[in-house]
Structure formats: C-alpha cells, structure tokens
Length: 143
Image 1 (tube, rainbow, N blue to C red):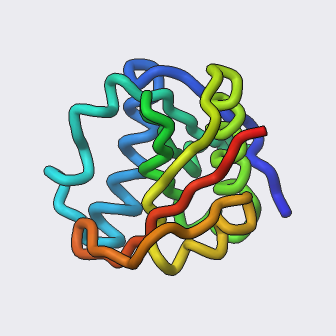
Image 2: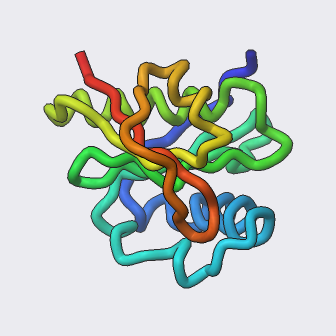
C-alpha cells in the first residue's frame, strides 16, 4: 500500500486549483457528472484535502463540510488501489475529530461502499440516485 507523498488540508482558496483538477477529471470527464452539479457553493465553507504523489502531482481529494459530511472524494486513475484515498479519508476524519465532531457522514457511490466500510462507516437506508449515480448514505462515529 503506497501512501501519498504529501497531504495538505486547507481552505478552498488554497487548494482550489488542485482539487478542481482532480474532481473535473474523475467526476466530469470519467463519470459524466454535469459540471454544474459538481462545483457548488459549499466548497468555500469546506475544509479540503489534497494528496500529492512523489512528483508533486495532485492525485486525490476530498472535502469536509461544516455539518460533518465528507464529500467529493476522488482519486485519479493512476493513484487508485494504493491506499491514497484511505489516507485522504482518514485525514478528513481526523480533522472532524479535532474540531469536535462526534460523527461523520457521507453519500458513497454504491460500488465504493466496501471501501468506506473498511474505514468504520456503516450503511444507512436504501440506495438512491445522485447525479445519475447510485449512492448509499453511510455514517461513522468518531472516538
């Protein structure tokens, strides 16, 4: 399992360029999500994480909303299956824990639910569609 070379957590104005690059590649190009749905007004109030590979290239991202939701988790194709997404998720969970959140929630693409389950998330409710992709709500308690 390869960990990211570096991982930065910061506000949108600091990480916008790198996070947008990853999200556009994964969501808009690869998954055909409408760009109008992908970018939203919540980015400016979120804490963002971006992981960089050994060459300093942005490879994974995610965000933590003020209400404890984690979202926009994305790993570029060449970074998948190496533990980099898990490192981003753990960093966002640690940031939530540090600010006093008791739990974190997310809407996982259904195919990714086992990944989140491996990080302590449990499914809640039934599958639903979001941006034309099947999702399941998941929640994890923070110790």
